[in-house]
Image 1 (cartoon, rainbow, N blue to C red):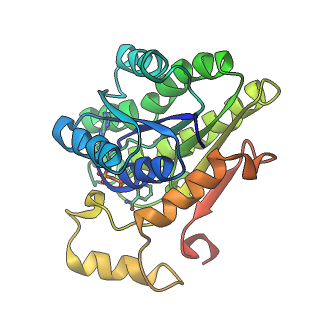
Image 2 (tube, helix red, strand yellow):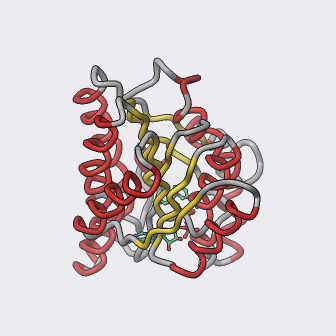
Length: 246
Ligand code: NAD
């Protein structure tokens, strides 16, 4: 990935941080983006201290103008855009559909679904100028099955899969591959508010006998970004320790 440029959203923590570090390890220049400025800058500095190239750019993906700025700045700073990992996302309120607040619905959809649309909308023209590219959208196992008490999250992730397939059809011939991946439960700060007994129960839903690690997800993102996956586009690939096989 030498001389290539990658954007990672939500790169201050968890899966996004692991992806940013993995792109840098592969030689790419990395735009580390998040709403958490200090933690995001720490990730960019970690890459630079290891001899890589990185820059932190503040971006709330629920704001279209900030997503436009993010894609344009990547090109202004590093000259091109080749890869994007649209990863930023939140868990949101836990309540059954009839009790789910209107505010939470708009908030979760605004980040987890509209945010991915805004990112792609502004990344694609920059990639076309660079002669092609690869976008990996971080969906979830909950992009293909339901999960009680998370209606907005589940709807958003199903939506991300639809957006991914549609954009893949639109831009495949122009050299942009667009895929979604579906992690099962991964050991990140996103799960920090879940009670211990619920985490123990979640483990039993993964035939592999444990939760996943961010670095395992990052390896799939790197493969999908790289030319090693040159015939893969419009796909939804679970990375789930067997969760969906049950
Ligand atoms: P995390 O909380 O560790 O990291 C998410 C990052 O996104 C944080 O740094 C946060 O500041 C950032 N973020 C939140 N809202 C944002 C916004 N509006 N704009 C920009 N950045 C924002 O969570 P994670 O587990 O690493 O989750 C990353 C992605 O993986 C999410 O899309 C999540 O839905 C998905 N995912 C996570 C799991 C899991 O079990 N952890 C499973 C499947 C899918």
